Amino acid sequence: MNNTKADKLRNYTIIARLDDAIPINTEEWVGVEQLLNQISEFVPISMLNNLTEQIVGYADDQARRGYLLGQEDLVSELKKKAAKIA
Figure: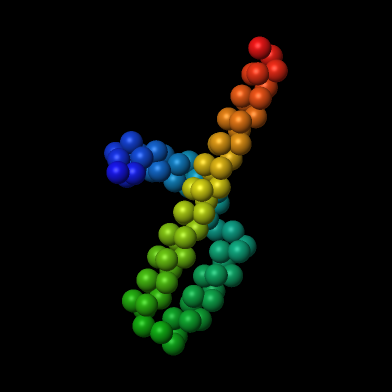
């Protein structure tokens, strides 16, 4: 089972770290928000909320994956440097 308590805690910790480090109100997000507001004139608000949740979930997942990839790269570099020293 991949989603143990430790995995969930690690994911929560990563998400909290990313939330602290990445600004939310960026120029890119303002553009998305404006488009969502325009779309809201034509679609049911529940559908728009679902779309927004999907976008946010996707972005969170991509940020988490990028963070983990960066950590793996960092560990690899540190191991290489440690091997050179030893």
